[in-house]
Image 1 (cartoon, rainbow, N blue to C red):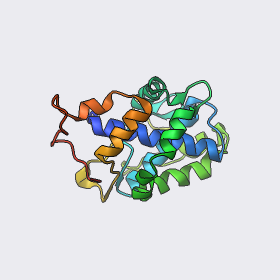
Image 2 (cartoon, helix red, strand yellow; image 1 turned 60 degrees about the vertical axis):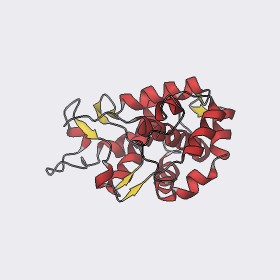
Image 3 (cartoon, helix red, strand yellow; image 1 turned 90 degrees about the vertical axis):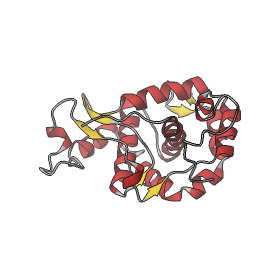
Image 4 (cartoon, rainbow, N blue to C red; image 1 turned 180 degrees about the vertical axis):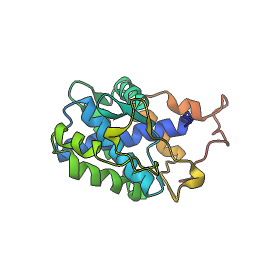
Length: 210
């Protein structure tokens, strides 16, 4: 299975949705470690993929404690650099929470995506890591015809990967103005990757929500 790199827009989408998930999970329960956060994101993306919804775009493979995404681990570092995430407390900063609160249109327009995250956070955020791991280990691989469980997969076996737009029935969308607002609120540099040197939006980057 070939791993496709995320586009700049997919990276921003993942980080924005990750902020939402962290905020929702801390409101529903707690995130007491990176392993639990990895599993909450995995379960959310799995639920989206099975619903043919393109939201999260992380690549997960079998690691020591089940599904793990190096991209997700890196994105948490990016959120910390933005001043949006407190890694020792596994929660958003006040600036991160403000960014979530000041962009309600993103969440209302993408209610299908958000409902998937909400469902996972409501069900699992208050559970212990052990309970979540038992549940995840006993899930069947979503794409293997043999219906192998995750616990039985060999180390480094790919488990989940980003959905192609051509196969998705629903897409998470974000507008140019929302990207600019997020840039102002968090002072991040990724938005510059989506525009050309003259300041015009790159026409090759889709903005379905515009």
